[in-house]
Image 1: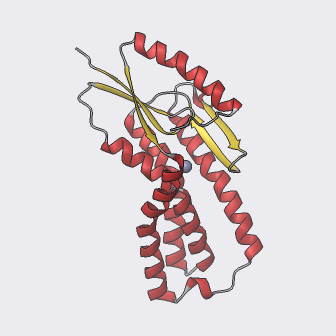
Image 2: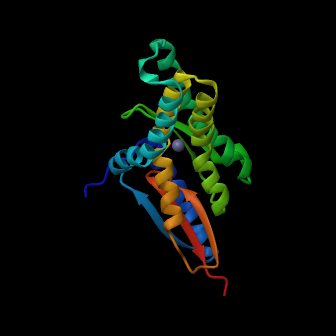
Length: 208
Ligand SMILES: [Zn+2]
């Protein structure tokens, strides 16, 4: 497989990561990479999101009829989607920052211009639970809560918004799946958002 050319920010994070890796090795940690192929992650991410979307649409249709047939302000929807995508990353950042020892100093935001996608990353390894929480929070806040509200209050606009946000969280769900699938006998495990790939780095140590 040909190596993808890293952006300047990715190169910088890679160098920072290599320093961290040495420090972690000195503390007795071994590195395991849980990587996802970016293209596969996008396609699989949609597939993972699909059941949730089908459920919310079916419930909505049964209660109120077809949400796609109702009139929506398309410009407003476009703006909401754009804001949602940015807020998604912000929620990753807020969750990570609230658990990271160095807080916001460990968080970095950026944009991959090639794909016009914003991202958020954290350069501090942390325990499993905060890592999973940081991955799922945007989908809960922007996907699940609006979906429930849309159904409770008969808001088709909100339903369509939640559909897009749940699809947007598909990649995060795959990352969560990979973390949960990974079983290790090591006594101590720390997780780090991959500095330049889609996925997670696991640092593990046997406390012998
Ligand atoms: Zn995300």
